[in-house]
Image (tube, rainbow, N blue to C red; front, side, top):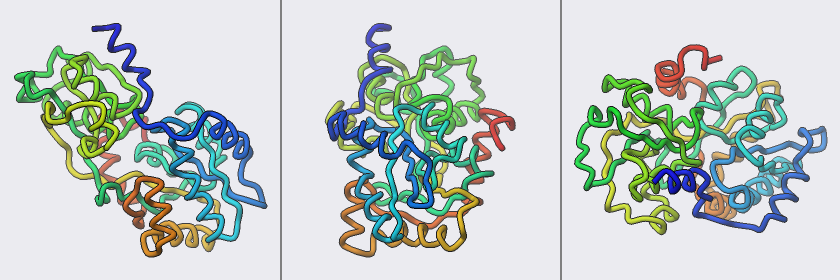
Length: 296
């Protein structure tokens, strides 16, 4: 079982897109910080790099046309490389998870949020197999929980861990393991490699997951309150007029045929406006799970 679990921790994303050459070109093209001649769009690597390139290249092209400024997509090879880019402010526009935004909110300002599968929100959830006989959070004491992503995964780790804390369990009461993404954590539980999976409440709607497993074999054990979806942010030192233009360009995508094609490529149903206070509920969970030191 341990050997199978290890293989799952590096299990590639079920979706694949362009070949490695396209990814390499994207990395080279966007290696430098946005200059006077252009802006850099950074997208966090929750998907395989080639899939990220496929999904968000049309977004970069659309923004370039709308802004009249070249927008170059950067696809980071892993989370460490991506976060280094955030810390060094090498991205002018960035799509990342809610915890990433909270940690970088002194240097980045949120302007919008994703809408996925027709929803502006999502929740953290804990999944178990229907045949596991696990019906309460208390029964996870001493069991293995496979979280979707690392300890900086807002929906895959922070939110599910918050559920456990509210039920009286601590990190020491479970055996925590981490899959590379929320889809793989659920796949692990479906394949009986862990007792529970920390993921998002909408993960079972992902076509890639439905192709990989029979989602009817799973049940949601617990779910958090709904939280505003993934944030889009820009550097705080960006001129206000440019910031507003970027925000309008993102929000207006669903109002035109060309914009809807961009959204379809990114597997989004829309993008809505957002402001900093919208992420205060997320901050409560982060403080409970990771402590005040995790907040700026």
